[in-house]
Image (cartoon, rainbow, N blue to C red; front, side, top):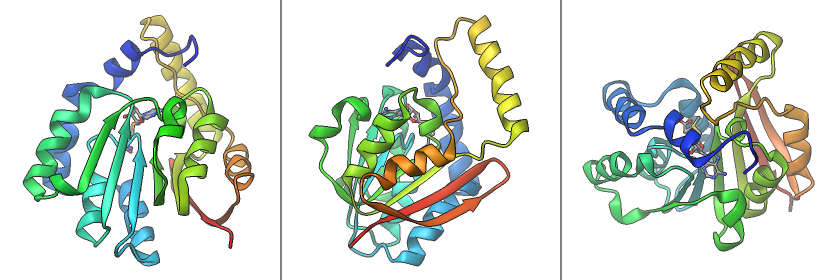
Length: 215
Ligand SMILES: C[S@@+](CC[C@H](N)C(=O)[O-])C[C@H]1O[C@@H](n2cnc3c(N)ncnc32)[C@H](O)[C@@H]1O
């Protein structure tokens, strides 16, 4: 990790409190729009019996929905420890504890110790990490069939908004930064790892992209 961000910074942004708030929202209203787009796309591809690796999956709601839809097992690799208690409770309530393995580590650093999966997901994660090629490349390498990503669309007004957020984070000495890595560079990085784009679905804020491993 570079000077921009520290474990303390991540824990401040992705806190236990925000984990509890997200869980309350999920229990009341289900998945948010971007996560729903990812789950719907994967269901359209068929998730029955597939293994899932989610990097930076937070409280793990996408994994829960995919397991309910028939995925075989899921592994969660999450950088911050703050989500673990809430995630464990959601899994237990859904009766899915035995089908998910959760690890707290920096995936970009530890990827060589993580087994590949049929489907790899990184939902709103690339924008929270400075070294995009390392993170996106490692995720692509672990995807046996499909890689699904979401990242900021890169529209000018979004860049401007995130620029202001970064200024505030810097002024408050929060040791955290939001990145708008160029979408074309993200896709080029994953294509170099043998994946072919099959979805580029722009929303108002987040683009959902999917790539398939070439035969
Ligand atoms: C904006 S949150 C998104 C959480 C969830 N995927 C969602 O969309 O609601 C970004 C998450 O990515 C995690 N993260 C960032 N870089 C990571 C890395 N290198 N390895 C594992 N997790 C990472 C952060 O800890 C955080 O939980």
